[in-house]
Image: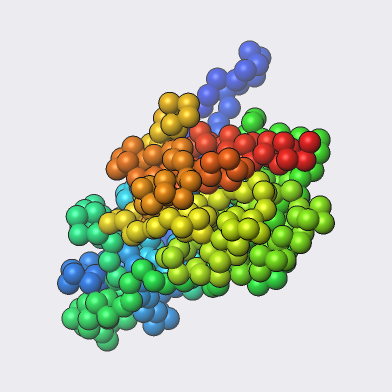
Length: 423
């Protein structure tokens, strides 16, 4: 673990707003940490090995085997580290300097760090932010996660982009040879076929009450009526639930394997107004219990007409439940600047995305699904609606965290669907 100390640094004098007062100097509290010294390595299944220095949970004999993916966002590393969708993955940050604003107790998407490892070009040895409560290395150490710094992340990202994401092994153990690490990476199971939702979703019903608080955007002002939302938890990001709460929703989080009969009964008794399906990790086709629940609710003779909204994995699960197909992307979409075309408005929205699977648009059309959004980088499906029903979903993240708020209107669309149904 790196030791942190604090020093006071004063900025240059600035003119005072009051003419009779002397110029003021801004006080910055800068935290300094000792640079990493422990050798560490990342070995990929293609045989390449990247040597650098470890940070975070060093000296604990950690050998982390997982799928290696990259994220192109310039900031928001704490939100990414705690995003349950990254479960089972080693995350590579393409931005060259990470950690310069530290971490805090608020900008989290779950209760712990979810990534299997974190790789950066340069770890900042000084962090300064009035909200910071810790440096990044200490934060990872508390969560028993190993980081790697001092490698060429541009070369690593290019390798993953050209060859596709692959398994890797991250460790600071020196008793393992490069050849042994490569062998371990090659023997690791693929993300395809893995159901990781049970590892991150809740196991019992919970009530959500947290809102956006001081970070509330101007558009997030809830109606006077409270709408009751059942949220199927496949690994929900906290900021999604905050947005729902801020828009006048009483959110009840339920396990991903909740039977359709139980959900249907709540709607028939008037105990729920809408159904939300969250983001989450792993292969959507492997989440069979959630797919079966949604299929029973949305198709067949017992289908009920309930406002339904899915995000990311929820988008994929809804598609599969309707009878569409999903497939694995070469290197996925992970970043905060993904352009998406809204086919209804003709406008382009800049979105935050984090997914390695996509929905086959042609198979969706065959089951009464209508495409509403497309990713302009590769024209993959980014959103759809079910014709004639208040059911819609998007592949991107309208809650951002991190990222732009261009797609925040989707939460309002969900609330409006519940309002229409109850009027």
